[in-house]
Length: 117
Image 1: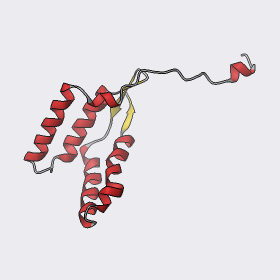
Image 2 (image 1 turned 120 degrees about the vertical axis):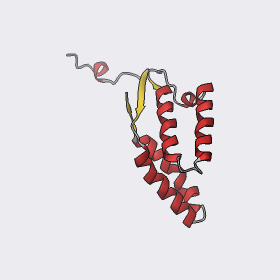
Image 3 (image 1 turned 135 degrees about the vertical axis):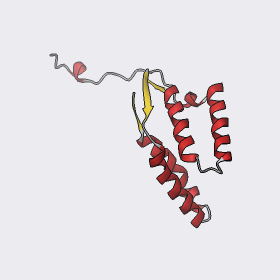
Image 4 (image 1 turned 90 degrees about the vertical axis):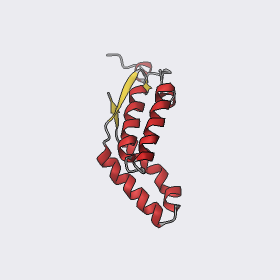
């Protein structure tokens, strides 16, 4: 094994094939969002945890990072806790919780439920 300074340097990063923000574009995702919104509207937004999981499953199927697929491992039960806590605290604080903390709760939950496929 070579131990020259050049051999010990990490390889320079190469630009990869990333498709994260574009994963939510396209006609299929548009119709999915419309359908999920209608389901939420019909159920008076009680189906939000389930429709959120459906959306992120479809989004993860379209996302691509350096040629690798990711999968979404979250479930509606775990998101229900996050959603209910955010809803209750936002109601109690007249929306202040949503402004300062609540918007980030979903992002944190999604990030914690992503894995390589």
